[in-house]
Length: 299
Image 1 (spheres, one colour):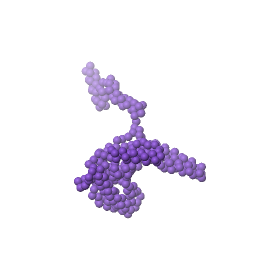
Image 2 (tube, helix red, strand yellow):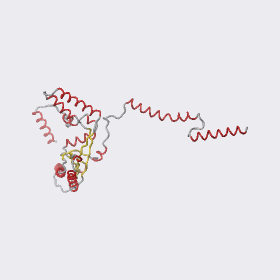
Image 3 (cartoon, one colour):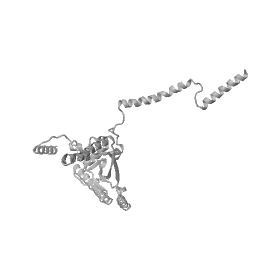
Image 4 (cartoon, helix red, strand yellow):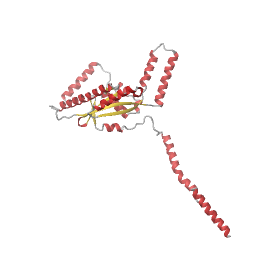
C-alpha cells in the first residue's frame, strides 16, 4: 500500500513539474478560460479593421496634412505688399526661388567651383536668411497637353507614331494617378524689419509708403546680391511676385488637392480676383473704375 501511495505522489509531483516547465496551467480545464480571456483583444482589433474598411476610412491620396512647419515660419502674417510678405511690427519677407544644379553629374573641378561660389555668398551674409524646401506632387499636365497638341496639329504623322503618342499619354496619366511622386522646390527667404524712428512724414499714408518702399529696396538688394553670387555656382535665382508667393502658399496648404485643382487653372479662370466680373465693354470698365476712384476720394 505504501508503495502505491509513493508511486502516486511521485507521479503527481512529476506532472506538476512538467506542467511548470512547459509554462502551462496545472489544471487542464483552465486552458479554455485563458484562451477565452485572450480572444477579445484579437477580435476587437479585427473588428475595427473590418469596420474601417467598410466605412471607407482608409487614408486617401487627397487627405491633407496640416503644414505646421510653414505656419511656424510665418505665425504673424498681416498681408502681401509689393511682392513681399508683411508681418507685424513692420517686418517684411521677400521670397526667391532657386533652380538647382545637378551637382553629382559634374566633375570634381566643377563641383569645387560651385562649392566656392556658394560658400562665398554665405560668408558675405550679415543679415538673416532662411531656406525653405517644399515637396510637391509631380504635375505632368503640361507635358501631356503638349503631346496632345502635337498629335492634333501634325497631319503627316505615321499611324505608328500617332499610336505611340496616344499610348504615352495614357501611360503618363495612369502613372500620375496611381503612383504620384514628388519634386522639391527650393526657396530663399530674406527677412527685414523697418525702423520708423528716422522717417519724416506728414501723414500715416506717407509713412506707410515710405515703410514699404524702404523694405522693398533693401530686400531687393539682397535678392540681387544672391542672384549675382549664385549665378557663379550655376544656380538661377528668381524673385517671387505676389502671385508666386500665393502659389507657394496654395501648394503648402493644399498639397494633395493641388494635383487635381492646379493653381494655374485657378489663376487662369480668374478665381483669384477680389470680386466676380463678367465680360464687359471697355467703356463700361472705364466708367466703373472712375466711379471707384471718385467714391474713394469722397470717402
